[in-house]
Length: 336
Image (tube, rainbow, N blue to C red; front, side):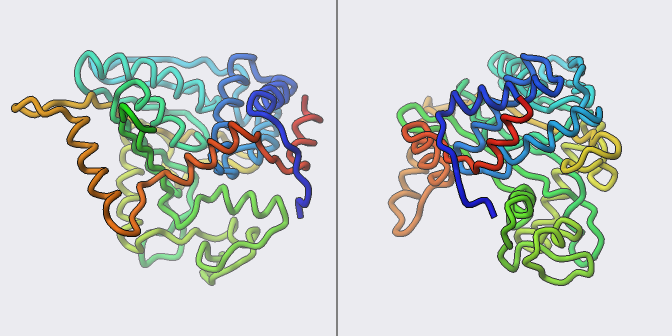
């Protein structure tokens, strides 16, 4: 079990991951994009999308499962539609490009869609939709992932954990950001538990025989339990349609694993919407109505807005630094 941690600032963490990725063949600009995304996730407490991913990323760069020479190709089949081929490289540079172009189109046309295909693991979706909110836009993102959830009533996995994220800009408070996996927990948490020698709580996953398990290794060979039972798998189908079918990406059932260096590239997809907040005919601004809605929620006894733990974790990381398991830091230094 990882018993010791090492403290470092966010900038130190970014530089360490960036150097490690360059050390295994990533281009400098790509390594910087990836390192920023991993550290941002780590700072939010989403450790399954942070330092724990570095060793797998490095192995896949070396094997070619992640294309170290990927060239992003951008098309606009319609004025407010952007389509990006990630060329089996990292998802993050493609997302950077999609968000810049999509935000520009949304401000011009009121709405824009962004499709990414031939892509890879995209980490914490909260990071990406928040970028749209910071540009004054409502942001929504979905992504398909390698199969991990069975259709309701079935035993064999067909869908990924297929996360959904949503963000809304706020003028005088942190943007509202919500990010959820359609499994009870993100599969990255199970992967992190497996690497760190921990068990997982019962109710997270099933083994290959369909039995509840607390063994993360057995869970990774089995399936994840969906949120909301049949409703969760219905949402997984929606995400699969947008992120895989619509973008032209691999279905989750055919996508290569994010967790090892063997096999074909995942070729998964991501789909984003950017919406320019509108106004009612009477001139009442969206921002005022949204703050009214949030105010009513906050006034309800016991209620809290989504994303509050994420904000507290990030504030602590910014002021106190990250506490990264020493084993992950050692891996990064060896790679660098």
